[in-house]
Image (cartoon, rainbow, N blue to C red; front, side, top):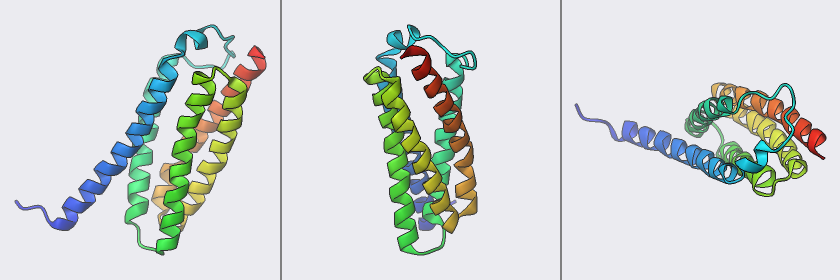
Length: 163
């Protein structure tokens, strides 16, 4: 059974989206992993989940992000809307990595809080832009936004308890 050129191109685009998103996941993981001993010394808020929860949630969210950006890229619509949505997707991905740098690498919950607030704005903008071309792509990012809202509260609590 031969695979059409269009099907092959679609699969390559999905694999590329997955590779980009999971590269960001791996980068954030390695930036965080180096300073876990410091993190273990911090006073934890009562609502902080066990560390293993993050290891389950983040790969799921990154997989959803990959499918979202792939769906958005494939959606019918103006090239200007597509370009703007992809730029903001890249910005939020970069801010996600930057949070690991700020919080873990620089051992600074305060800096992490600033970055995560910017990340929230970037995710919200990305969702609005994705919705212009693909409602399903936008909806795939909503759990990510909700999780980052929770992590923002967690980041604030770490900053408050440890400053």
